[in-house]
Image (cartoon, rainbow, N blue to C red):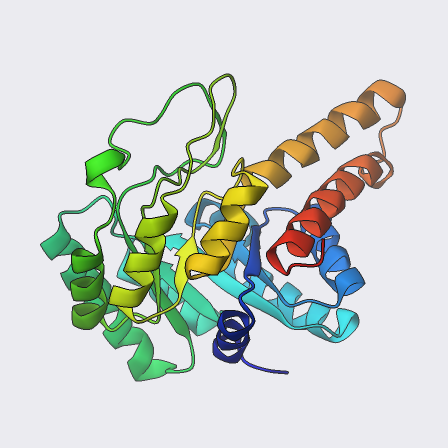
Length: 288
């Protein structure tokens, strides 16, 4: 099996993007892996700090290791949005393939210093682990929103190519997640923002490392395709699959009001998540 670095390099060459999907339960995990296996595509499973606290760092690593053999496809594990060096260490020691140190809310100098510290640690103990840094605050919650969160980078506050180049050079990160009009979560009653495609292209040229698009849920297909063409090689989806999961559970409870066996109520949630992931993977890999 190729390592994650090779998978991302291949994606860049082919002008496609690797799909990254977050999990916090077994149903979502199995639905994502079934979709990836159906299309015979690599996939990254992500867990935020909150999701890791719920599932367990060691448990998540053991599950992914087991499913690699069962599904016979490239499956990778990422410690999504990690805010402390201790949490970085936990994920690296557990066997995660990648980790994101998220200092996006910090002043630039502090973000550089703390991200550099994380990179130095990871490369000293497991140099094969990919380290991603985030530059530009895009919110933190994968939920349905009624308004733009306070402090989110918009307009002139989006990540600049100059800051991106400096950030990569001084931290030594392998991947960069910039703020380019993307926002974590999905909007309920207002239009989704458009990505700044020209800025993505400029940042990729200046940064010199592959770009990651966070907050992909709700983004238009046209923006996804243009972003990949401009230099995005990895795309995160979380809120969309959470919404799909919930709708499936609600449907099952309506249709089976007397059922108490959890596994018998999970079929619609599994199918809904599977369908979202298939659609996204097909789009990201130009299979539509």
